[in-house]
Length: 251
Length: 251
DNA sequence: CAAATAGTGTCTATCAGACATTATATC
DNA sequence: GATATAATGTCTGATAGACACTATTTG
Image (cartoon, rainbow over all chains, first blue to last red; front, side):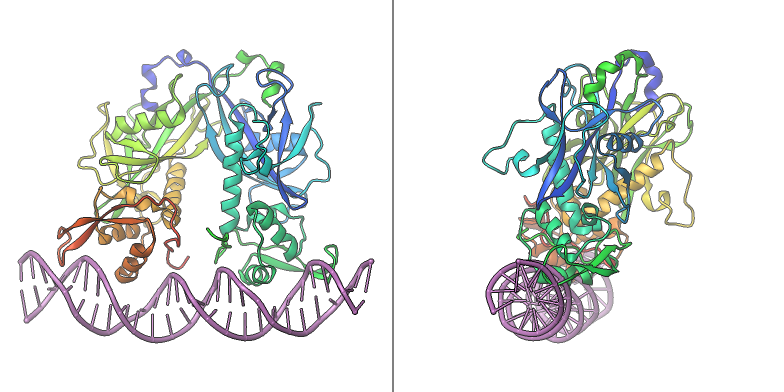
């Protein structure tokens, strides 16, 4: 307990390093993708890893995550789903602190989940390291080729982040965080289909999503960028929790 | 990023202290209660606080939380809802790391949520400090008397834990963690009513809860400890997610 | 024209909520 | 008997899912 601090010499504690790691998800070409960076140094040299870094002495956890996200992607983070023009949703995911998760020292990592619209270019960060969008389906043990494992415990962190995203778009309007500021119902449906990995009935989806109060707000204009009949454009409404929720099939 | 470590001298980082804090909830006399301990030293001397303590150099986060829970309550923790005879459900809640949340030094606290059945005695832990079960309704800003604020940022942590519990019993079988190993449908209903702070229809609740597959398993015996007609006793079933979920009224 | 997507309508099985009724204990 | 709680049944409105149909674009 904290009150027992006097029993310990403060400096007797070996220092814990505290980092933030980011699970950055986006939807590219009908598939859920995660941002990975390649490690240039040991340990796990040459492995792909989640972007992340140390928390600085004077910054909070969300602040550190937001800074890392901007360094890696150029995105500005916001915690409310809505019309950030080039913004991404950012929320804390979970904290990982197994004593041996980093062979160098005791590192406690506060993982965060970021949801972003498709980015024009997966530009590498300030460093000259390489970065890429990886297919989530190939990283999680879904496909036949489970792919190369990630560095540290990042594979498990990624899995937790994907599961969080999959469940949270059910009962919140978070799926709009994957969309550009204005989007069609069809584009929003493709987000759900990519994240859940299922096919949804376009007609029932349209009825459901336009009937949920506060989810979508018509922008007034239309587009034919998907082909076919012109589709109405929407912006994210103010609602954060969906009532009734979107239901994942066969759950 | 972690790969940038070589840019920093490891010892140049001021040490982060890492603690676990516990939101321990139970239902006593039809009311949701939280375990609090009184601080005997500055800062916040005399304030009530959440139980917690430092993470030791060789233990993981869940391990530290489990150890603290045992020290404070004597309960053994398990992460799966079910028939632990004197066990409590324990899960990670969130991590709090505002730079000034502890005036002494930089402390990052990994908060955990514990759900326990009503304990025979709210015995103080190994220390001689005083501990008590406090009414959640008086701690959260629900009643007219919002009560004395808690130490540090523990008021916010408690609120987050309560909200997690309230939402999680909707779609999981976690409410059984508040019950003894064998319980009646009426006792389980009182758990929902206490956590949500609403009245539920006993007949619809009975139909709903007994119709959800895997939620409850009849133990074969009955009891009259609630008075009236003998009630069937149940144990928690193997299901962890409820389908369909229990719905909180007017949500 | 065909083909694609957008949007609306209809039908049905299921379910949540309201509420009546019967069963079995204690006082 | 009165009263409490347990357990089952009935009715109704809402809705998820299946699927027919129309609308409007491009090729």
